[in-house]
Amino acid sequence: MILPHGPYFTAVMTALVGTADPAESWAAYDSDNGETMLMEIVIYLERERAAAAGFTRGVLLYWDQVTGWQWCSCDSTGGGSDVHGLVGGDVPTPDSVAHAAALLLDPRTRATALPAPGTETPDAPAIALNAALTAALDEDDPATVRRLAHYTRTSGPGTTPA
Image (cartoon, rainbow, N blue to C red; front, side, top):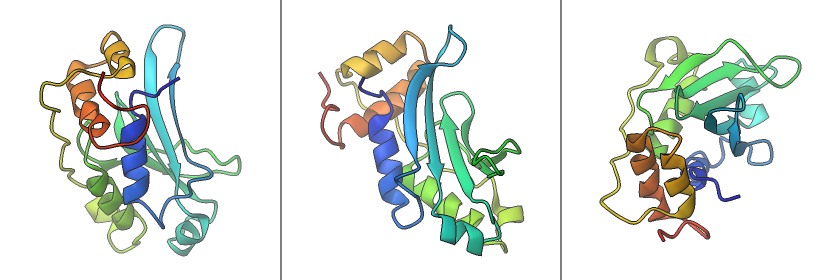
């Protein structure tokens, strides 16, 4: 399955190079309750960098099209439940996410600078959407899908607008 938000995930991972742990990070497009399709991104930050910032069990970043970007420190299972806002906007630019992650990893700025204001990804100009984004329009907010479409114009295989 081609992920409608796969190119956005790739762009965020590129912006977080050296900060994110690609082996532990993932994106999914799945039904959360049998009714609503949910685009999700989970990015674990590199464990040594997280530990140096005071997150002894790690820290993860989480995005979906409903809540936007959030973060939480990991518990003993590798997950977490005490979530906090990371960066504003439905689809903030990858550089905005990377900037917020840097603020998160700096104990001097974490408490006062988060959630960071984000630069919202602009809607893509009127283009034909790829099949995955076209299908997502049936389930999701069209404005979010149009912002995600911006990344289909600039990212790898399987993302060329059809």
